[in-house]
Length: 319
Image: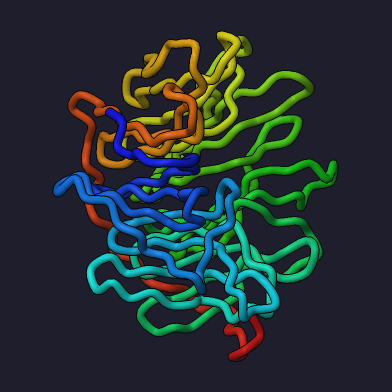
């Protein structure tokens, strides 16, 4: 089902429950779609213009976060919007270089700092910012789900990118990956699964990590060619070039069965999934629009209670 319309391209969708968000390039804005009412609204303003880049927009529950710019700021700013109250505010003050934000319940994570970047976490309730990493290594693609924080990290002897996983209850970082570079990770809303793409030479594959069982599995064959991935509940979704154009595929974690969601000559990419609903951007009509499909019997993850560990507070005005 197509849920967007109007001029220009609609880009990089994210979904949580009944809410879908995306970037509209014609109006340089963040759009919010409520699947219950069918209404679409603009939640950004002239002082919070979103970057038209992938992995710079995320949503969970009533929170939407994005990296944007304001005409009055020297640098980019991380913004957060509360759907229930309609309140839009800054997380960072424009003096840093934030990017790759993720959000889960009470927390926002992102990459900021020098040219290599570090991982930061923001407590939405208290307004406190803490550091998750403070080292000379490269960090990319931060995300958070439940009690699990993830990012891409090159803290290895070979210097290739692996996936770092840290839980709030046990602040011990685990580095996951196979030979080659591992990147573009996503964590399920309950924090139980992490999915990402491994690249070795000209081959790419989707990997899945069970956080509780501490088990890593390659879930696509060498004939697959995925370029973006998301995980939630019992399912992994990814866009794939295997047929010469980008299609969307669904993988059932419990059965190990892969099912095509789209198979046509158009391009479909940057999928996301929440509570049994898949969303992606497709150019079926020419411009990029936002589409959805339902997973039959898709599970709804149970709410997860989180508690912040003692990290390293950041002085006010430092970000």
